[in-house]
Image 1 (cartoon, rainbow, N blue to C red):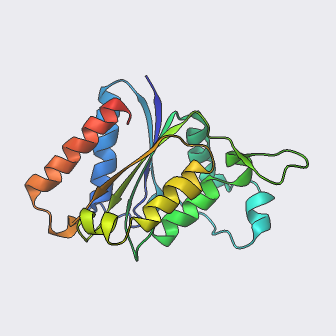
Image 2: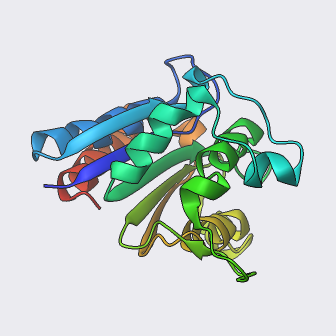
Length: 194
């Protein structure tokens, strides 16, 4: 049995979004398999945006982020589900990650060492990205640029390994059968905590 933190990264709280349904399906599969889960809808969390490096390195995590921070520290596996907006994470989702992966949460402090060491070693992650374009176009033509950045330069940098990903494309045009296939896939991934 594993402990999982599922971050529903769609910034709009309206229930109609596919990301919300995908997060719930993943959680259902994980819970049915006996895993402990925490599901946080980023759209429901109010937090300040970081504006200066000292906010990241010298300030404590905002109180509204503390439940997510504690769930992250406890988790063996992180799942982040978000829509592709302007080629990357929505700004609110990125801002949440900056607060969640606050310096004291994500890095070890050591005297005289200018290169930080990530505290998330031993944890795995799964990124689920939804896009209006075909997944193949995002992966090949656009080279999955923002996904690679998130995998390597953010999650990998703080120690998550492995970081797996799923890209679901053409989501706006998906019919009910296709959406049900995606939900079943998320439920299956949740059962395996993968």
